[in-house]
Amino acid sequence: MRHDHITSAKQLSREDILTVLDRASEIAADPASVSQKQQGSLLGLLFFEPSTRTKMSFSAAMKRLGGDTVDMGPVDHSSVKKGESLADTIRVVEGYADALVMRHPSEGSAQMASEFVDVPLINAGDGAGQHPTQTLLDLYTIRENAGLNDLTIGIMGDLKYGRTVHSLAHALTNFNTRQHFISPETLKLPRSVRYDLHDGGTEIKTHTDIEAILPELDVLYVTRIQEERFPDKNEYREVAGQYQIDAELLEQARDELTVMHPLPRVDEIATDVDKTDHATYFEQAHNGVPVRMALLDLLLGDSDE
Amino acid sequence: MSEQELRVSKIENGTVIDHIAGGQALNVLAILDIDGSRGEVVSVGINVPSDRLGRKDVVKVEDRELSQSEVDVLSLIAPAATINIIRDYEVKEKHRVERPEAVTGVLNCANPNCITNENEPIESSFAVLENGVRCAYCDTIIRDSIADYIRGA
Image (cartoon, each protein chain N blue to C red):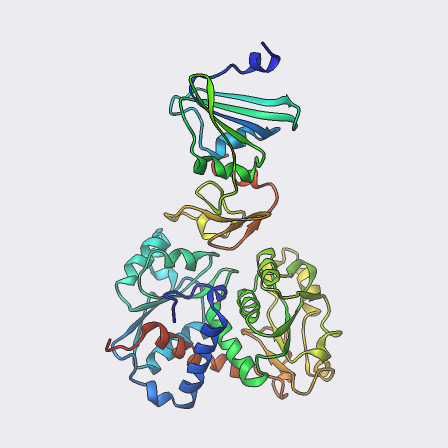
């Protein structure tokens, strides 16, 4: 791949995306073929915010490639607590690892960090900005279940602050897709994402209600509406209640509908959906390992080079 | 002697920034980081009658010739501004401001959660769009009231 750093889904071309997905498919089919591929390589984990899936799947991916990880650990126990700047932290840690994975609460932090290091830096979430590796595993899951051509996808929930949504919407402009955005008025896509989608020739179809559009969808991508975004808790409960799906609602959907969620969910997907054929979110989370293995292997290259 | 010349006299050497939209002169000084601290003589005319703009602001900076790249950033807040380079009381060069592709270090990002608003050793950077500017770090687009985000204003 021609990128040293993966900071935003915007930088990924269709060719880049397909290269990673194809490699991930090969690895998923024969994981033993790469089990020693990155022996001796170290991946630095810098998570300035809590993470379960992303951190564990990066760690699993690196170890399944034969490599290992070094972990900054929780912020409370690090030099960040003493007031060290991100620019300093990242330049120090660069010396400990062959590639870095970083999650940070500020938008633009990954872009800034990438300007200070020479080893590949992967954005694992920058505030409400971008989460490009989640997007790669989302695209992999979509391709496996619904295909990426002639796709009708609904993206629902917190579209304003949801970094997985921003990255996915950008990346989907590389494919022949119809994107429907379903959210309360206060949580619709930010201006910058709408600008890019228009720029990429994508028509943005917005809805405040899922029911009318549900029967048309091949994929429904649900995200969590976060309570902390609402100063008024009553308003939160009222809004969040309108963006929940359950098995009964999905009876109106196509039989082949794929329901995805970047997780964690709270109650936006009722547990009765888990038993339906629509539920794909756990498979989606598992896909994080082969996709991240593929990405790390492409960025790190052959360990004996 | 006309009324306007009485208000702000001719300068011998330096730069006259003319045809600034009325009320933007202090923002022009802020965006150019001109505050007189280097001893330069600065004259400011605000809401001066103008045939073209109705009311305009004028800024005269003595003994300093501002380069094109220095003044292009003014296109964000004063797109009609003209730049006159003065030598020996004569206008030796006259040009308009042009929209730059990017501006660095002059605007604060409107997003309080942007990394450029934290205590990091970086300058803000914005791509200049047809209608507004866009943060090179967090992607936030500023369309309205760009002058409100001038660093140090």
